[in-house]
Amino acid sequence: MKPDVIEGTPTNMLAQKYIEHVKKLVERHLTNHFQIPKYTSTIPYISLIDTFGNTFYEIQRDALIAYLEEIDKEFRNSLNRTKKYHVKKNENRSLTTRFGNIRFKRTVYVHRGTGNTYIHVDRSLGLVKYDLYDPDVKSLLLEYATEYGDARAARIVTDLINKSSNHSIHISRQFVRYVIITSKLSIPKVVIKKDVDILYVMADEKYIHTQGNSNTDIMAKHVVIFDGYHHTKDKRVELTSKHGLVHIGKGIVIKLLNYINSAYNVDKLKTVYVMGDGASWIKTLRENLSFGGNETIYALDKFHFKQALRHISPNEDLMDILKNYILNDYIKEFNIVIESLIQTNQHREETLNKKRYYLLNHKKAIQHTYNHRLSCCMESQISHNIADLFSSRPKGYSPKSLMKRLDLRMLFKNKINIRELYFNNLHSNVTIDLNKSSFDILIFDITREEVFHNLLHLNFITK
Image 1: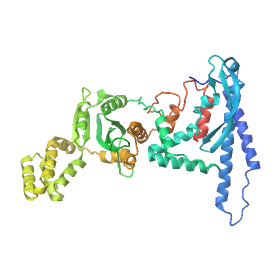
Image 2: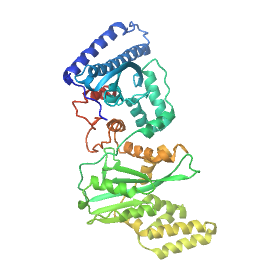
Image 3: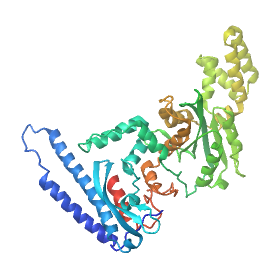
Image 4: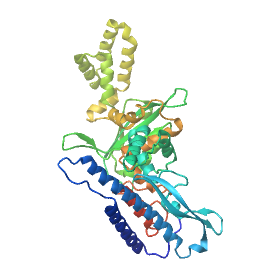
């Protein structure tokens, strides 16, 4: 249901009216409350900072209250309001914002046709009934939880609010979980397709331990797509147009194909490289990345190649010899060395044979890595993107919420503004465009003129 449009007052007049009101509010605060400590050579600097901070936070709270009450007043006095709604009662509402707790008056209406209760301020600004925290605070919790985890997000936002007011609030980890579970975030879509000759796909998996799951780990499949390498000013190598995907169980192929088809003109592709550790599901990706005119090549990443060599022998010289045997197809010589090692290290026979067959089964993929001069950094990607947050908190997540948390993590790692996405989908399922330089923070399916109040509110609280 769309919020009702305020009629009768042009938005530019309303804006000017509110600006004048805030100017008077600021002047009154500065006159009555802003007492700068008298300067002395021993003036306590912290007192000066506290004076500035407390005064301006109070101005922000009062300005926000005035704005909310002005919305209520304008709707109450708007043309044709009485045709649809009659006043039921006036009541106060308390709300925690990033500036601290506020308490404002608003009108409760009853729809003349349906008898349903309607509160214009709550509906038009997306304030959920009975919520103690405004959408801005909830969006901050969501953003910080995606980067740092639930407990730390709760501490960060709690400290932010408590430093802004004399109140002492405490946000629990459980509330952060509630915000995550109830948030509606669409996956942004790409609207500008790129023309590239080569596309790179890296893949790996991470097992995540969960709660209430019979001590069973859940495998998260992680894929990173990019279309080239470039050197930064400090001579680091970065991946061009890097984009990460993650999924539990079946479905990673569909996600991958959907992204590639939306982000690239596949008919322009000549080569698609798939890189990984040799897992069967990664090899299967290659079979799905043939778009008609391109070649698909699977390559084993150097990390797992060298790791297997090191498991055979830590001796650097012997590792180089075995490496050259694999790269140059000297399989007979390779097997002779392995058999010799088994004869002298019979207690390691199982390990040596396991690594021997691993390298021989992936011989062609290893050769592709070196012949095509490929570099795969998937180990560091899965470490930063998945392990940093999920492996550091064992048994911290339920199977039910894990997929949503993983998607949120990927949005963050793909440099999507979580807060703006949260506002965008607060009362809408609209999918935003990934290529836009800034997101549209419209949160209702109505025109820009009609949501002047909403935009002003969001700009006010996000600056």
